[in-house]
Length: 140
Image (cartoon, rainbow, N blue to C red; front, top):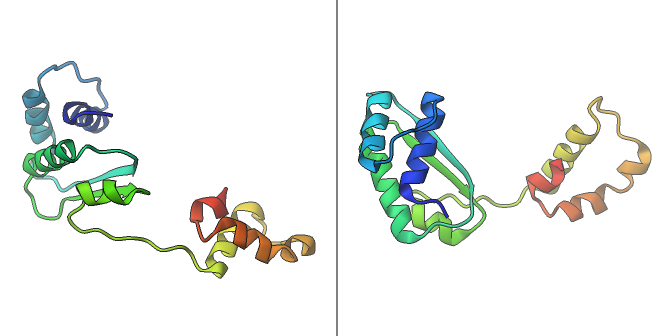
């Protein structure tokens, strides 16, 4: 599991497109503050699996303190409710897709030209059932 300093290093490297050579967490935070200035940002932490609650709060508090401009957003996606509740201020639980949306994603990914063979159409219910309303399953 990454610690706050490691997360901040990754963010800084992504922002500056350079390898971080600094060892101090405080220097990394100051460098992030300088790089962001008064800019607004959207930080996406996609598919988080584990977060220690102390680490999660420390990391999020540090990020919020780096740039206090209004309009900044940190978006965290996870499949694990405990992770979401650890880092989220405003939690949104997404439901499963409706059957027709699931089928639509499947068709778009598999049949680029839009022509679906009849033998596949006859298996629509089985395919949609196997996807269980999950967009990733439908697209894969």
